[in-house]
Amino acid sequence: MAMTQEVREPHMHAEAEYFTLPSGHKIPSVGLGTWRSGSDAAKSVFTAITKAGYRHVDTAKEYGVQEEIGEGLKAAMQAGIAREDLFITSKLWCSDLAPDRVKYALKNTLKELQLDYLDLYLVHWPFRLKDGAHRPPEAGEVLEFDMEGVWKEMENLVRDGLVKDIGVCNYTVKKLNRLLSFAQIKPSVCQMEMHPGWRNDKMLEACKKHGIHATAYSPLGSGERDLIHDPVVTRVANKVNRTPGQVLIKWAIQRGTSVIPKSSHEERINENIQSMQIRFCLNGLLFERKSRVRTELFWVNSLFFYKLQIFLISSPTSNHIISNIFDYLIFFVCNSSFHSYENNSNDLKSTNKVIHYQKIYPLKVKTQIMQHLTDLKFSMI
Ligand code: NAP
Image (cartoon, rainbow, N blue to C red; front, side, top):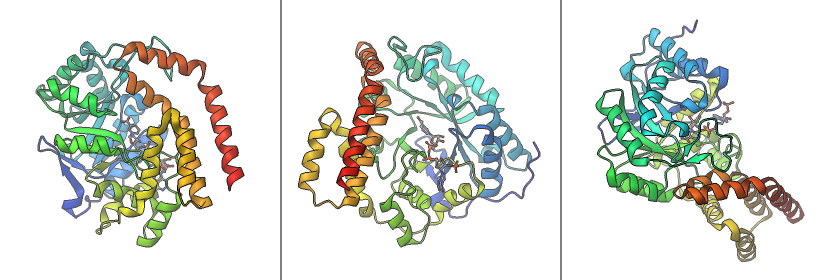
């Protein structure tokens, strides 16, 4: 790959550049996300490392871009970046969540990335899927997950020197406690969705309590939930004279989490890592109201129409806030399914029941609810 550019040193201020993991290894504060980076992956990785000064790249077998990322990493190393200065994360996919498949899956990932070790290997989701399972899975496609057996194999990867640190993604507090009850090597990192609209406070607190580092994914809203154009975020960004993306990334870092924004555009790749250069603390209170609304919505579930009415009646809302609430509700309805699998996956029967139920009802119910919300939204504004 012809990717020759001037290699830039990582940013200078050491205190904001890394967090120290329980193992003593250091994880860079800002890494490059690679989900949905497609054919741009090699170029993005190379640009991020050699031009923008990134040292952490986050990927996964499931993203289907590990070979491209391997090309980008190889080119960056040929341009003079040392392997030991890079921090490369990948993840064990749900269909490989069986003790006898862990090492094989890791070796395959290493081959695709053209590396001989990973800095961090994460369990991608805490439920096991049948090979070739549908997306989303259908009834019977979620299998028994031997959490202890899989974790023992993850620990063996560390002992064998194939992986420096191990961790998990998308765990609940309950599942984390279960893991901690038998882990001989504690997870170093827990990766989860976190941004001002979904703070994930409970999990973050649990991680802090156990000395586990947390990494925030989808920090910009993942392109689907437009946090970049969110009025609260925009207002804060204007106030501190930075871009909305930088404000969102800084928000994550100042909570003590590392963060892995994805971009395939050079100017945004640059913009995102420059968040580390914001030397002052953002006023967290500016985000409070938005966070409360979002968290509330996550809990309302079947009662949400009732609670929504109470909320609307009891709040001194403006049209603008009402509009925001509806946007969140619509998002919530659309995105609740994955969380249902996860929350129920301790009990296979109930998981498959949820999937069965969602298979019959989802589109109809979701479409009706969304239509209802959208109509209501427009009739109230
Ligand atoms: P994200 O980083 O929150 O958002 C990415 C989106 O924002 C893309 O559409 C990107 O577009 C756009 N963007 C990036 N920088 C921007 C900026 N400065 N201004 C405006 N728009 C900007 O979403 P994500 O990809 O979901 O999450 C980040 C990473 O976390 C993933 O790539 C993946 O590595 C990891 N992740 C892990 C899990 C897990 O289960 N462990 C789940 C989800 C994500 P362009 O590319 O066009 O710039």
